Image (tube, rainbow, N blue to C red; front, side, top):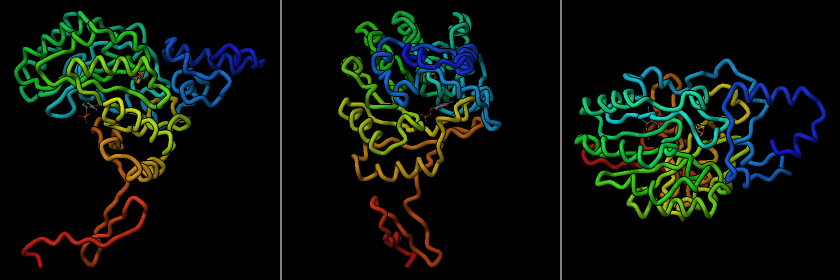
Length: 343
Ligand SMILES: *Cc1c(COP(=O)(O)O)cnc(C)c1O
Ligand code: SF4
């Protein structure tokens, strides 16, 4: 918490609750992120994402240690193989910052650090020996915590596997610590294979000049940029806030990919909102910004069943035939597919 807020709270209980949160979950905030926080704003959307909060101690019965069921699909350490053609490779468990709503908050943090050389080799061997795998997604933790030299080593190993065609990185480092995105890092990722970097960003204020410079380094190295955001109460559950974020991303040549409904991670109830609220926001964004600047609104089904779009329904089948379609302004229209041979 900013020093001012600490001093203005005389009572001990809130303070000891915060201590309990810090003992329970990893906390880290970079100077870059700290500089974005307005210490005078108790509802600051940046502070809410990164600074520990006593409400994290409130755990609901529906919340889970492993909210999206990674553990059910881990054939070897460091690999999550849920979909036939793509795997997660979790080489490191640490991050530059610890997001308070993180779906892997029980797994990430200092201490567990990274896969050993032997474990990494076993994970790579699993990919090499599984020809159905065409895409490897490095996530974690944050893969860009690794040095460019280590990343180059992993890239080289993946480049040598013929069936791996795409290499993807899920990261918050370019947002939280853009100075880590050096020319050396960008060069380490350069490849003949398709390389995607997916930035985790939730608010337009996180897109600083330093972040834009980092993004340009990836683009110059021939890397395609996507983004993923988590829909969070108090941070971005507002069409205007998300509009600004998605417009800013598109202007940086970043394609907004996913808007995640928040996962059932322990102690994250204060961030949660209903699917209907998310659908309402998506409904009002459609038509307001370019189609290519709109991410898919997705839910990761608890238990390890994968992600599915949970967009509002725009089309409904009529019992008497044909369809009722709703336009982006909420007006309804009749539609008939007019298939030849079906009168
Ligand atoms: C999210 C996720 C992926 C990637 O899914 P896409 O829809 O391709 O982005 C792959 N594997 C696992 C286990 C995941 O959780
Ligand atoms: S950077 Fe990603 S993995 Fe790390 S705490 Fe944030 S959401 Fe979790």
